[in-house]
Each structure stands twice: as structure tokens, then as C-alpha cells.
Amino acid sequence: MLREIGPGGTLAAVLAEAGIAAPARAEVALALGAEYDLRRLRPGHQVIVEVTPDGTPRRVALKVEDGLQVEAIFGDTSTTRVVAPEPEIVTLAGEARVESSIFAALEAEGIPARFAIDLAQMLGGTVDLRRDLQGGERLRLLWREARAGGEPIRQPEIAFASLESGDALYEVVWPADDSARATIYRDGQVLRIFAQPVDGARLSSVFGRRRHPVYGTVRMHTGVDFAAAKGTPVRATAPGRIAFIGWRRGYGRLVEIAHDAETMTRYAHLSAVPGDLAEGGRVAAGDTVGLIGATGTATGPNLHYEVLVDGRPMDPLSDDSLARVIRPAEQDGAALARLRGARAMLDERLAVDLPAYASSDRL
Image 1: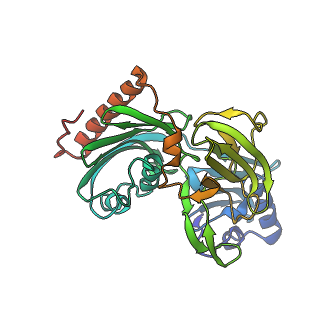
Image 2 (image 1 turned 90 degrees about the vertical axis):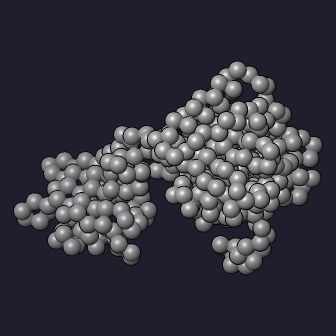
């Protein structure tokens, strides 16, 4: 029997529907719960139940997020295992014309709209995606999807973006490894290196006044929040010196990095900090400074990320303070080779996905 968890549905209800008695249902929940937090079951997750002729469970499996399957087998000895799918990595490309916003342009073309956040992070301080775009700008993107059985099993990852703004061409090449360091180019020349604080995370709360999710009052949110699974690496967004490691009320476990005499970044709600990280030590952009957690005042695992200038919080998605303290990278051959390779792959994919596409003659 295969059943999908519906709104308000539970594993116990599915097992009862399969005719499994209450003591056996408890045994199944205990076995599966050893490998998967059953509180994370959501509508859309699937339950597979196999029973013996006398109604006792033989095999119960959960198909949950990212194509993961948790399976419990019952008999003389009971075993539970987690089966992760071997994903197929598919490279896709798309093109959009920006009229009202990057988000709307991506959504209209069926391109993952969440990439608007990646672009805002990368180009913040270089191009203000809310004020500088006049309409009609061309945006081209290359991204990767991990699929199992033809279905996406996790969030897509952006690989390359090209944006024409005014008389300039901005391009961003994201790394294929786990370094999290992306290279930003203007008119074919390296402008700077940037690291996202959490790779592939979902922006769950923006900078500004909001109703606090815990206290219920309207107050200033002094940073941005990125929701991700507990234990996901948190990375320094720019080189600097560790100014503080410890706990603070509300923030929970916290790391602060001083980038110059005026500019600091703050990484909060961490579950852990690397043992070799120490106050006064230096970090580079992309270095791991902690792991996603829910310490302090948090409703779930996330990173609360702040940029402060002279002690005042600034909007991390639009302020240019970090751009000023990140020195332009050298125009090394490897960086330029990565750009040429990304351009070639984008043109190749667009030629397949958009036959009418005519590539730009811009260098």
C-alpha cells in the first residue's frame, strides 16, 4: 500500500488505515524515528506499507524530502536504513528580459525565481537590483538541478549569470566545488570575489520592520535570515579578523568578523563553531565559521546574518560596505578561463533550449 501524507495527516493514521494494530504502530514509529525525525513529515511525503497475511508489518518506508527514503524491515530481526538516491545532475539555461523586477522576470520565464536572491547577494553594492534597473535589461542564467527519477530532489544551484545594465556587462561565475567563492566580472575583468553566507539556502526574512515571529510585536529586523537544515555550513562573506565568538541573548551562538575599522558581519543562531576558530584569527571569504542551528530566539534552523557599519545595521542585500572592503582579485588566467568556459556552456545550452537565441557579440 502506498499513501501520501495529506494536510493534517500522520504516520499513525496511515498505519491504522493499513490495519496495523496499535502496539505494532508504536514499534514502526520507534524504528523509523531512530533514523528520521517524524515531526518533519509533511504533506506530499509518501508512506509505503507491506504487511504479512496476519496483518503484522513486514516493511514500512518513508519517501521524504530530497528523494530520501527511510526504510524499516521487520521479522526475526528488525533493521532500519536510509537510502539516498544517486542523483542525475542536469544543466539548464534560460534568458529573461527585466521589466519590473528580477524576480518577476525569472518567474515569467519559468526560471527558479529564488535566483533573484543569489543575484541580489552577489551584486549588492555593485548593481542595486531595485533601483538601478530601468527595464529591458537582458539576464541570462545557467543552473544545475539534481534529479532522481526525473524529478528534482533538492534546490537548484545557479552556476553562471550574465546581466547587461546600462553600458556594462556584469557576470558571476559560481564555483562547482564546495568553496562557495563566486567571482564577479565587469566587462570581462575580475571585479571581486564574493562568498554567500549559506550556499543554496532560502531567504526567509528580509531587513526592515516586521512582526517578530516569536514575540508578535512589530520591531526592526536588523539583518536577513536564511533557512537551511541544521548543520549546513555558514561561511564568511569577506576576509577579516574574528572579533567575537560566544553567546548573546536572542542571537544564541554567534560569530562576529571585523573587515576593517568600520565594517563588521555577524552570524547568529549557530549550532556549532569550528574548533580551530579563535578570536583574533584571520579568515578568508568562503571559510566556514559555523553551522546552521536554532540557538537563541529562533523558530527553526536558520542563519541570522547582519552587516554593521560603525555599529549601525545595514541591509546586507543592498549595502555596498562589504564591496568596498573586498579587494579586487588579480586578473589571473584561471579566473578568466572559468569565465570563458561558463560563457561557452551558457551559449551551448541556450542554443538547445532556445533555438531562436542569437548569442551576444559582447566580450
